[in-house]
Length: 176
Image 1 (cartoon, rainbow, N blue to C red):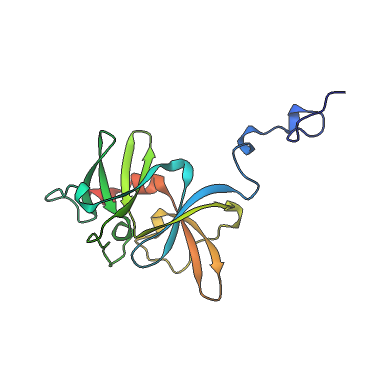
Image 2 (cartoon, helix red, strand yellow; image 1 turned 30 degrees about the vertical axis):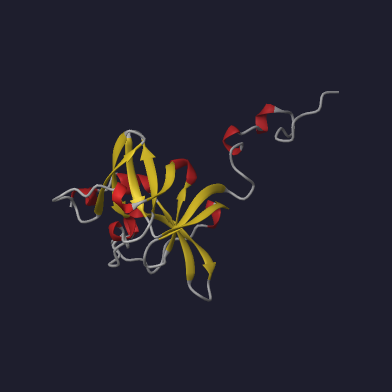
């Protein structure tokens, strides 16, 4: 008698779903991070090219560019824009660039890469999108870029907001 792998139930291949192979039982892998206003956000790990901590002098300011953009960065031979994610989302508090290192999350879709400068990286977590709720109490400037939120602590009104990296990359806000 041949034993079947655990992921095959019943008569065999009819229950095999390859898309479930890369997920953990708790959901998908996300990067958690903070913007200057101390709000916590997450991005799906599969859309992130890399996370780097770099000296602010590695970001070259570009005159007459959008105020959302801190400048450009040479990322492994490719020049990419670096944005203050908090300001992009409508926050009034600008990112403090007067420090030794700035965390930058390079997100990518097709051939477009943008670096999102954030206040602090929180780490990686497995999260289940089935527990996502509609965002509440969110400014209109932020709403188009959110996929939902997870309630972390209802008593403290603490939530983790999931960003939509495709909406961020395709935003007309970059032209401003």
